[in-house]
Length: 455
Image (cartoon, rainbow, N blue to C red; front, side, top):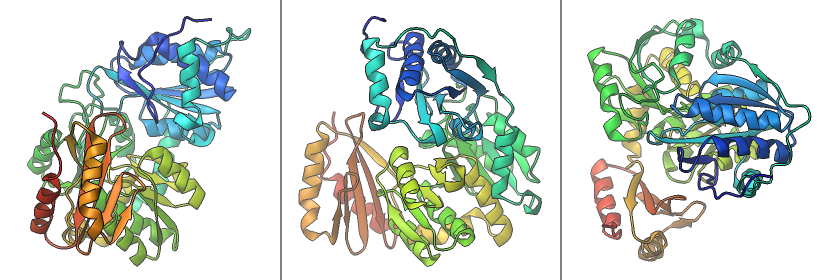
């Protein structure tokens, strides 16, 4: 029996915290033991990102799993989607990815899945694991300790990625790729060898010291290196990823950052050509463009609450061919309903090839039809009170009020979604409009007047 502890690293959908204060080798070891007890699984995949603490956390986790009597397939340095793929490919009972994704240096975490890469979140097992970890209720060491087998070969995963496009038909587009010293570099190198594309790579070496800043292209200040390199090398498209590359971000040939929202409609349209009449899942934050593109392509748009666990569950329920979030998470039925940061750019490259259009030409019309703010975060003293204030101000004139996730309100020429963060005193606002960007700016100023930012 281990002594009780208090963990702060367990979140609603994953495990995340500062190392070693909130997450350390002892906690990782306990998680391994608790995972096996709760799931009764026999074999688990374990992968890790490039963060400095990931190898020691992975070793402790694997020791916990094996001492509980289960085997481990160690896939080494990888992205989160490689754990998703390997869990299905090896037909094992679950998988764990050691990563803190885009969090600052000094943080680390874990993403857990069951068989078939079904997410383990608070209400599907994560809370039970936390309880065992906190109470030290880890059973006894197994009479037959499990074994660890290394499987670092990415060939099956790369082969699967290449099923989404006809590589031989791709035009030799020139692509600027910026992994941001995250885990995407080795996968890109494997794909480069198999694709007739021209490449300019920057920051491709995985490096947990983050010499060029934490890989998080959602932060505008983190885009400049990508943008400059793209322009200097006159590339057709720019790509960047977060640390565990489950999100992919696009830049057009002029270096303009393309909001993930517009990629959802574009990818939905592509997949509906291959799978006519299929369902497409989207989140509630920005919707008008996605719904219009899906319906025009003959598909059925289905709204789901934001968050990977909700999207994946809804995709399985609906047997949706694709799901997309404006935050640049893209989910595919043929990828175990999971998100991938590699499949989206492969599909866009194929679309640029078949249409002869640039990325700008593919999205400009949609951006003009439905300009959006992107997600804006405000630190406020009281999230609930601020939401109530906005609701009271706008509800009387709203054509539609939807509380699937926070509050969404629709009017004749615009709509907004505002919601609180699960983990911080933050208010997250998204606005989209029919018409001009100038109209959008005035609407943003109007909503912002109701938000009291905390000092």
